[in-house]
Length: 385
Image 1 (cartoon, helix red, strand yellow):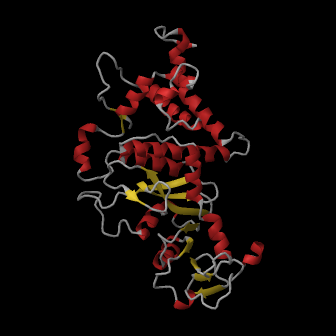
Image 2 (cartoon, helix red, strand yellow; image 1 turned 90 degrees about the vertical axis):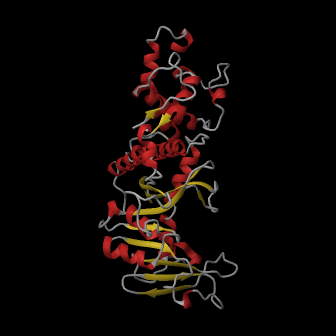
């Protein structure tokens, strides 16, 4: 799956073939750098032997070897890559990405509440499907649609936005990248399970909420953009309405609510649609805000992907790169750090915090390489201790 390609660092007398043990060590060092917040730090500084570096990196492999492995890292067959790229923009990462997503699905069963949102993997170099999202901190990058558990923040399903694919087996109809098509693909594994799905107004439409309930037996709670034709005009009028005022509308298995928050000085309303709620109940626990239960449920379940982004940002594996497949690989490692910790923490007997858990996993990945170094009599004694 992970292939090594020789390049400018390669020399028949200076390099040797890698193996599974060394690749584990490479991944371990990438993840370990994240726990020291050193992913963007100069590699030469990490490998310094004057006491200012991080010694375990130097003991595991040389700086030149680490750079060589990263430079040569590929995720597909070079011999057929150009042919595959003519029909698939995601050809360099297609196989590893699909295997990763499949393993995420098999390893966890989500709770009754899931959420869908987009992630933006920061990337500014050349990429045919680099995306611009002004609301995101990084603004430019590779967009990924993600479905995650709203309670535990485990990432269950992913899909890279690649725009319109070239003619070929991955070419789809014009609606392939529509919000309804994206959501339908992401929820395919939980279809018919009576779970609730929360997502924001980019995805939301009346037909989508209706389709999820009718065809997939899934309820949904979402905000609606005010330009949707399905919203009655009365729900958009805020003049002469007091703060914390709510207006409800009921249809066949769907409920619409318009709410004016207390904090909105211009009395702008927010509009939500739900196929889970069928009454006008107000959440009394909120106090003077008098928010409908639809809104409090939405607020409690909408931030799953945002929490994943926050956890990733705290211990990010990502390094600067001009190769988008490598940047995408770093993004997958970041999700690995989140998902594996969710699985670990699911057992109440496990007490390690997130950072210490990642460090322990890293040392397990480095263990075989460090043991092998002990047997290498050609290494300097200081590197074998």
